[in-house]
Amino acid sequence: MAEGPHRFGPHPIIGRFACSPSPGERAEIEALAAEIRRADPGLDATEVFGAGVTTGLADWPTLHIHTVDKPLQGGSPVMREHRALLLARDDDMAVIARPSSDFVRYCRDDLGLGRVEVLVPSSWRHRGRLAVRVLQDETLCRRVARLAGIAGGLNVVPYQATGGVWALASRIHRLAGVPVHVGAPPPNLAAAVNNKIWFSTWVARLLGNRALPPTTSASSWAHLADRVRRLAHRNGRVGIKLPSAAGSAGNLVLDSKEILAFTSLRDLRAHLREIFLGLGWTEPFPTLVSVWEDSVLRSPSLQGWIPHPDEGPPILEGVFDQSVTGPTGRFVGCAPTSLPKGIQDRIAAEGARILLLFQHLGWYGRCSLDTILIGDAFDSADLHWVECNGRWGGTSIPMTLVNRLTGNWAHRPFVTVGGLFPEGGQHFGELLRDARSRLFDRDVGRGLVLLSPGPRETGTGFMALWIGGSIEEARVELARYLNDVNRRQRLHPRGPFQPRLHPRRGPRDRRSPAG
Image 1: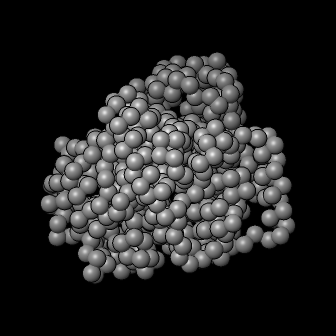
Image 2 (image 1 turned 90 degrees about the vertical axis):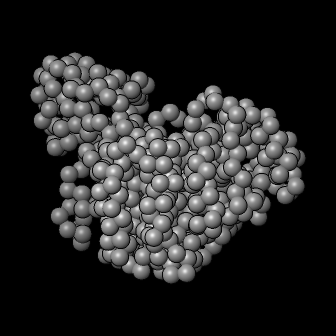
């Protein structure tokens, strides 16, 4: 795959691995892509949005819109919306429902990312679904269309491709009469690739069943109870995942001893339903069911960018170690991996085949793949592919930002942390004031970068990264900063609620998952 620097619209993309599938592997990938297309002919369809709306990025202003259409997603909507500013540049636009003026100024003045026009939709219907809200705001649509007309075209870069994003691009195209490029895949393909059941099905076909934890799916309560008990007989823990939830927001981990304490499938089924309702999972099927691995050595993620086929093969930008916490494996940060080169090369080689399959299906843009290494030692570990993040996220955005700030993150390693919750909270202006002496200095290429507004604005927590001369330096300095915040604010991580199963009793706690 392509190495070296590239630019796609506003994004600096730097390839790290030169992985090229063999002719036999390429033939297998092409045949599998053809099979998937036959099963779902409309997977990459965009015709309904008009001939002037296509995937891609050009040298035009960009509308950044970090929106979702699904109600169950990880992270704070306010935090996600503001992260669009970390990707934006001069003359770009970012849609933010409740903008933090302090964070906007910080990105513009302290980080020097550019003067970005912040667009605030007037409609308060469809909370969180920014694309739909902009569509309902005629004044805002015409404002964007006028700027697109002046520039001769427009890029739309979403957090994740959805039907609402593509409908908005279509609306702007019709108003402005100029081409609009969406820097993301067609909406049906995006929904499929982000679906954990779809992903596991085709990765198993491509790489073999050993490339996944033992995995199945359930389509009803009776089916779920049976699948859960079967896996519990042979494994210590069982994981249940809502297939389209982001990250750990739709994960539930059950202890096999507690599952097997139920003497009948009817009782187990009733208690599973009670737990799901307590979590707010009212329409859970189909649901993915898999072994929740215990001997996890590391949770690496592979960051990639998929261009159009005529622009070259998928670009592999790096392998990152993910920090996770809690029983569901909630993501709380990342750093460039310290894995041995041989394991990195294996991750890159297998990931290259997956991304090439997606390219043959019509994917364009950001895509990352999550893995786990299982075993007692790295040299004998099994590599399991567990999830695809076909969207921007908590690793790809900081990685791209550090490229923008330093030219190349590999020369200025960084460490991120997120999901931190000061009790009582702080406004972003207070966080900025307290961190002033530590903030990133472009001249020395080191320092603290705040990635989101403060806890008062987000309603949850905040994210930060430290850029240093080495990963260890970045870890130490970021830890010192967090310790100082902790002394002032009693900072602590908070994870989603995990119920326990009790025979003949319901879960002890009925709270919904945090975040």
